[in-house]
Image (cartoon, rainbow, N blue to C red; front, side):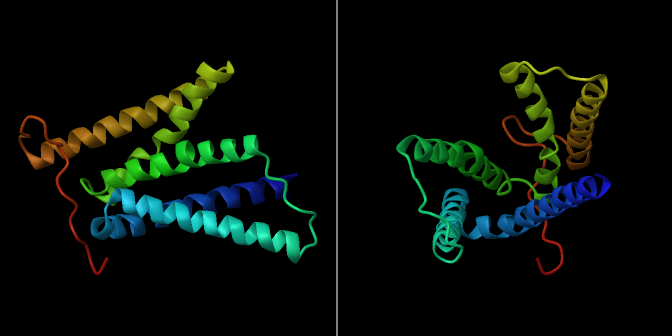
Length: 171
């Protein structure tokens, strides 16, 4: 059981590392192509990868034909748009205005939103530790945004307190 938990944690850490790498690399690409084109390109590549894996599983592994019911395809499309395309498009739009490092800090809100939605939609309960963790995440983001605003000086009405991203090194 301990090995299984360690493997799961390693997979989560690897996933977070991959997401962070994506965030940094995509922030470079989005400046050249724009958020919509970048998000669309990423989704097409992902669809192509899924198609290759599906084809390989049916031919190389001898899996009986893939059954693609219309309702399953609709759920997959909705999941792709709401779970991936829309969030990545919004994220990519954000990194055109703020640094990738600042945008990445807001990704810590994912578990907070997940917790709130699990209560609202699934009727789950929140433990004290989860509530404290959510409060720490929100407070730290608020503090960081406040520090950024103070560092950049007065902010004009309707603008962001976070300055444009600065280029560091060769990236």
